Amino acid sequence: MAGKFSQVFERDKHRCIYCGKYMLLDFETFQTSQLDHLVPGAGDDLSNLVLSCFVCNNLKGKHVPPGVDPSADRVAYIQQVRAHVMSERANKMQDFASWTHPA
Image (cartoon, rainbow, N blue to C red; front, top):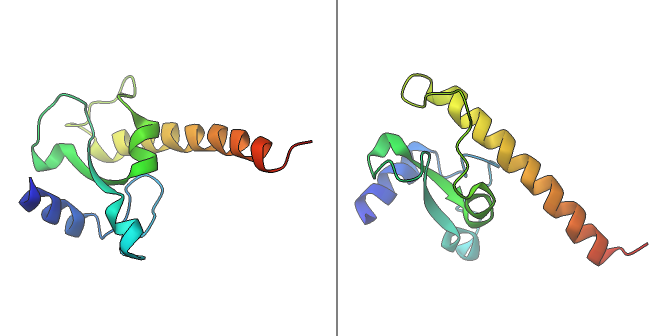
């Protein structure tokens, strides 16, 4: 898997495919880099792997957007997954804000 990690890391230009975080920012950020399966359970083919940060990978979970075939339109599929992840991020940010800035 290390070889695939390097290939995906380079292909995705060192950025989380979902939030755009630059994964070479520092050592700690690099260590949160993960391979994510676009379609959970669909195998380790390079077309099914993307670079993700730890947070986005956890927020995505096993989400599969309905009505989009990743083999027919990979870009649209990624855009829909990204929208889901960003929505989950917004929800978690509200939770975080309630802890850090209570009313």
